Image 1: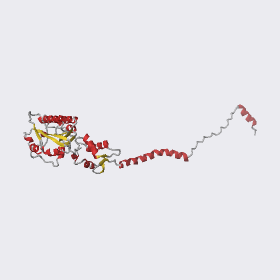
Image 2: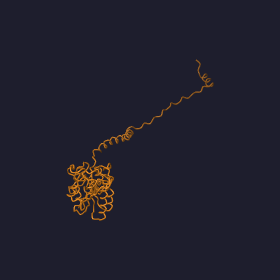
Image 3: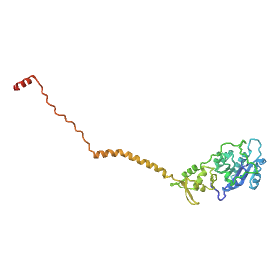
Image 4: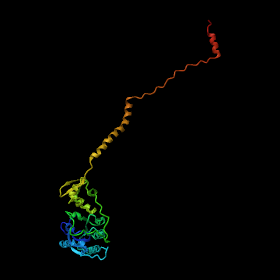
Length: 317
């Protein structure tokens, strides 16, 4: 969040009193003063109604101009219409550089968008349950609850009901909770240098552009510096003047089991290759000796002549 240290920015503070408790009057003006000078301060509502009696003292004490609007018809919110008309008049008069819309009513979403389209800075101040449509339509949205150091019930006035143009109570469409770790991680990845370091001021500027409702006070820290230092997944270096942040590197212990499992696989894969090599070197191959068949005995063919010759040659006894 960028504060105007010199107070050169003129801000028109437009308060929807029908939708805002008077107990926030002092705190919200102090918050707006961080970003410029509130030259115009107006509160809109039907101050004849007992429900807004608590605003009477605050209007005088804070020099806030009351813009009394009578509810002409039941079910119609003339306060919203009067605030929007005045905002457009101030826009064309061009005597302010920024607007602070104090309301939790999503009916002012179109007004915030129109003012920003004309080059004006828009600050929104409302409850944490303000619909996300209005929160994202502002350059910066601040929850009123975080402005109170001590939350005390307003004993002098009844808490104004949250109503829209139709007069019906708001329901649903509450602002979604911000995932802090995801938001910080994305901001660091988007702005970090080659070594992963980024300054806290760079993170803050990125978050205000991407999340209009981001405020370290929503997470229990008054400053963004204290918030990032409390995160276990971040590491910091430097001093308060220039604090740098980066994501912590993943632990190496998780990678050690992988190395242990790979070693046996390599040994098992090489074993079949070495075994045949050793066998072929030490044990020579023995060729099989073919069997030699004994020479066949000549077969004597016996004939009649042979028998006669045998008888002739055989001596008589």
